[in-house]
Length: 279
Image (cartoon, rainbow, N blue to C red):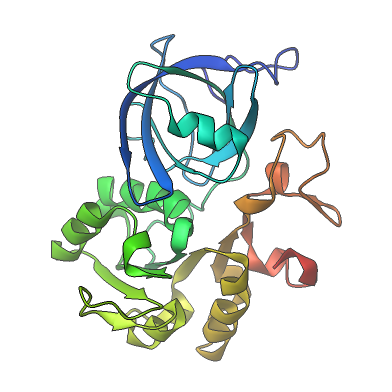
């Protein structure tokens, strides 16, 4: 649980102040923020978890953590889609936000040790996956082959471009990127992210596969993984898009008996195989 937010049964809705120490636009709609807690204490979290971010008098929203717990501070990516996020986009270095959390389930950080890992990221789905990818790279000797597939709708919407370029230069991981729509400045793969799956060199049925992206992506990625015999219990999906309050009270994220904010946002796919409305 997060020390800096001092969450307990009495104040699970109480945010703690954090200061923006870095900001930059990743594309036309996504804003990167680096936050540091005003208490000086580091947040304790695991890749896959999220926080609730608030701005006084406007509201709050669940935001996936994009940084690795091995680094200082907290990295978030905010998409400009509504009143709250528009207000956050206007903030500058030195301004403050409220943060509470962390909440939710995590990626299988311990179970994944020694195994080959495949990350399939669609659009803004790269944001939570990046937390686990960076954690793995900071503990590289503890994991097997690392393969990252990144799909983006168009060239101008690509995220973390400089960082992806650095990943592609590394000898200890494989990174493949594709865009749905051809562009004059792009000489890489053109097509949806599933077109990259046949190019994976890892033994997929023995790998752990992490999937996060827009709703339309899941069906086709999961079908493609089934075709190459990846077991359902080796696939982890992130359903962070469904969340609201973060503590299982509002019911916004309920899927049958599951509350995404508490049972998820990271689920083993085998646990959702009989819940078709989840995907």
